[in-house]
Image (cartoon, rainbow, N blue to C red; front, side, top):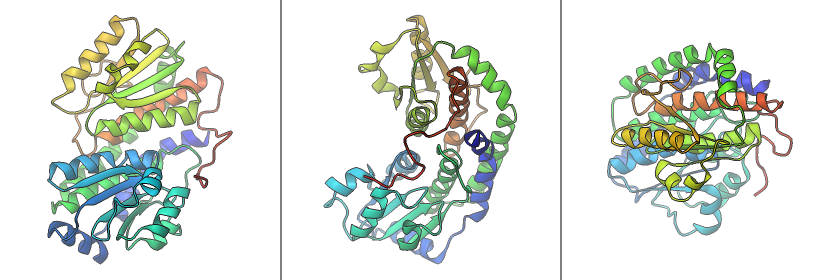
Length: 338
């Protein structure tokens, strides 16, 4: 049950990463160049949950008027050779720092790289002009510790990019780590409760908007990995454009309540899925079920808490199928083939 143990170690991964954070001279120079307009734009890239963890930072920079491109590394590598120029800042996120696409990208890329990784000896860490290290420790299979550690570093990076005082966010992240610990202290209760809710479920859709889109996309990915059932993450709006036809008693839809101004839309979606004989729950402050109920959250820490009910679902769904959650049979922890 290495995956389960990794899940339980997430609060410490957040605290360790928070304690490791520091404004190095190289990072200070990047911030100065960004704020003085020396960079043409920022390009954010990664694969899998590393890519999805960048969504809150992407929105943050766009809100601040900073031209920002968010693109999967595999696409950037083969179709985006002209997208990144020497006057751009390329932010590359890779938990291993050695996935196939990232290794190839750093060989070809002409622009300065800011790397975010959990592996100090990796090619990304050794090559990046500016390095932000997370401190999640070793992870067995499915991304969980490394994901929340990456979210932590990217939240801090966003505040640094905008020239804001980091102290308030650091305190918020620390408090969130303790909230995570309290939630995870009831892991067995959560899983047993969800085993009842998820009886008969054959496929899952996760839906959200804004920063919660990171949670929805990551949720779809890790459910496929850890449980081996069809699962998708998407925007709540996209769910209505086609996937709505999938509603049935065999489909479970988890909708992240998220931030205003779309909370009412999300509550309405849950009610409508249930009315049409599907099975849906809301994850957020207004959730009625204790597994999905989250305390009031700051936008910068919301994804850290939102992923926890998803992880409880993966444990319950695997249990219902007689499987070991998070056990890989075909894939490997590090993808080294494009």
